[in-house]
Length: 111
Image (tube, rainbow, N blue to C red; front, side, top):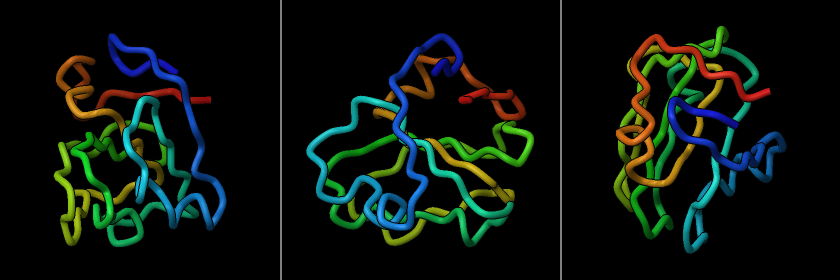
């Protein structure tokens, strides 16, 4: 999948187990982990980084796959909530947002 200037192998978190596990207990993230939510929501798109031992970037997208928020998440954070409701979010290796050059409102197609 393509995010701005970067290309990533894609992994879908499309089951309850995959969504619950996320990045917990992984040693690294070397692909794009794409989460598919049932509806646009702020609270339902919130994440934590307990039991994640590395920093990573996250991009939240609305139903139209446009970026509504993005940031770097540090290990063992209690909660990270997007500024606007999101239907999807993508977890990426740290530094990907800056290297990719993506901006708020930009569309990301991951089909």
